[in-house]
Image 1: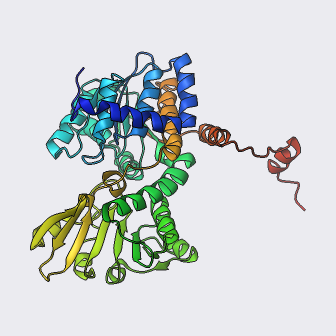
Image 2: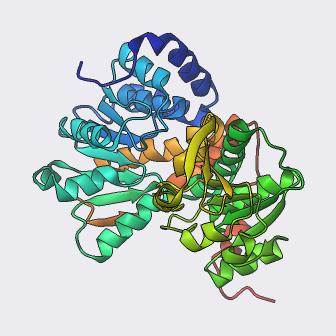
Length: 418
C-alpha cells in the first residue's frame, strides 16, 4: 500500500488511542453502523486533508465502512500523531501520508499523493486540497463531485473563490453547521487551546493577563476557559459588534497595541494575517508568551521574530525563547502553529463526534445529489444539523419536549396575536 508515515511500529499505541476516541464518538458510531449496512460510498474514492488524530481516524473508518476507498494526508505539518498514522496504515489498511514535523516540500508532496488517487470527493481542513485542485491539478476537477470544509479559515478561502468565480465544484461548508461551530469551535477550541498552553508551559493562569485576539466562536471559547482558570481576560477585535458582545460578556476590550503592553499571554484566533505584527511585538512586555489557535501559522509574524532575534533556543517542548534586540525575552509556542494540536491532542473526541458526523453526512449528501448541485458553497441542510444534535442528546441520555400540533399551528400563523 502506498503510504508515507514515520514508523509502522508505533501502530499498537495508535490503535488503542483510536479505540478510546471511538468509544466516545457515539453519533459517528451510529452513522457508521448505518453506513455499514447501506454502503453509500460504494465505488467512491475520498481524499481527506485533515489533522491526523484519533478522532479523524474514526471518521476515516466510518467512510471506509460505507464502502469508500479513502486516502488521508495531514492539513498541518506539526499536528500529525505518528502513532495514529501508523495504525491507520498497519491495522486498518488506509493509505496515509503524514509525518509530524514534515517540511513544506513534503507537505505538498503528500497533498499531491492523496490527489493521485483521483477522488470523487475531497475533505479539507483549511482548503489546501481544493486550492491545489484549482491551481496545479485543474484537469481533475471534472472528476470531483464536490468537497467539504471543516474550518472557519477554509470556508473564508472558499467563499473568496466563489466571489472571484474561480470555484469550480460544489463545497459543503461543514463549519457553518450549528452542531459544528457552536460546539467544536467554542468548547473544543476553548478547552484544547488552554490544554496546549498548559502542557507547553506549565504556568499558572490564575492572575495572568490573558489576551484573546478575535471574538468569533473560537475566541469566545478560549476567553471563557481562560476566565474560568482565573485569568484576567482582555479581548481585542476589529468588529464593533463582536467587541460590544465581549464587553457585555464581562471582558475588558482594548486595542491590541495597548493590551500587548500588559499581556502575559496573547492567543490569536482570527484567521487573518499578521495580527501580532512588528509593532505589536515591539510593544510586548518582558517574558510575554505568544500562541496561535487559528488554522494557519500567519497570525503571529514569526518571520519578523526570526529576522530581528539576537538569539533563539528551545526551552521546553513546543516553547522557543526569542531574545530581541532590546534584550526582551518573548516565548513562542508551537512555532506559531495550532497550539492545541501541536502541544496537546486537539479537541476531545466527544465534541469532534458532531463535527465529523457533519463531515460524514456531507459526503453522503454530495453522493445523493450528484449532478444536482451547482457550483458554490453550501451549508448542510437544517434537518441533518438537527438530527446530529438529537442523536447527541440521545447518546447523553437527555430527552427534550416536543411541540404540540396546536403550538406548531400557532407558530406558523400570523393572525393569532393578542
